[in-house]
Length: 141
Image (cartoon, rainbow, N blue to C red; front, top):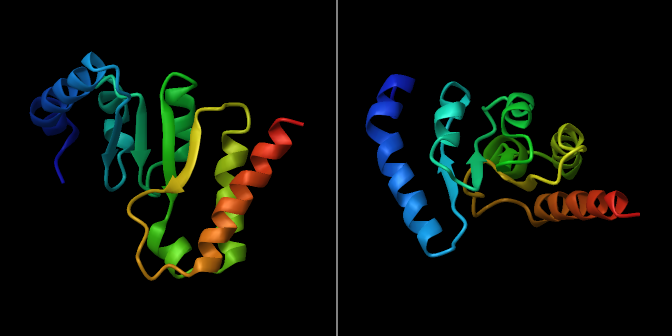
């Protein structure tokens, strides 16, 4: 937990170096930072990462507007409150909400905002995958 100024001074230069090395090897790079990263979103984009994996606390509409189609957004679904403790219907609703925000863009990967808890009910994971799959099929019809 550091301030945006501290992120820029201490973390951004190192993260940019890692992204640059990945790109030297023609590898894509996904940057993940836990928590609400709204205040450092623009700095995260400066790393040159191909994708940002962001927690559920980050404003997804702001992410969509800031990243456009230039950087892929991955995540946004609360791993504990929705996937672990929610119902399949809750998972469906939250996934649809995010897919609706990104309906005009192919730059979204349906994913938990952080690691999926090991005790997540299988039916919730199925709801996540099926909702994403059904949305993908609709986008290509």
